[in-house]
Length: 94
Image (tube, rainbow, N blue to C red; front, side, top):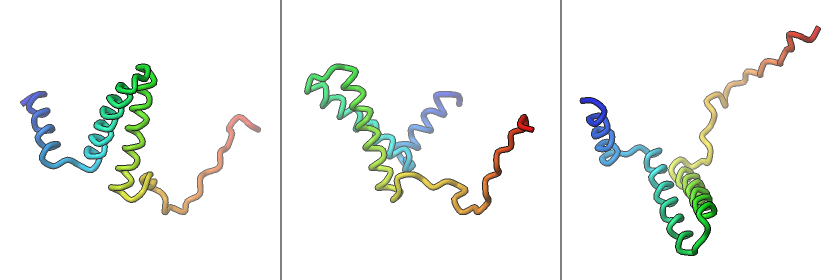
């Protein structure tokens, strides 16, 4: 089908059955748009407005992620491993 066929399938899948990550990113993008329009109405300078809107988007992304997963940061894959890290050995030190 090519590029446009694959794109159409991806969009249909996103609309019909979005993943949790996609839901979180859509919520963050919408919050950035709303915050940008809010700061525009207050008449903030462009750089301040966009920086603040992105900051609001990150905050919303972390809050929504916490509401979906119950934790702020996903655990590392090797949390339960008891192996100790190897000590650094300097090959040039005699």
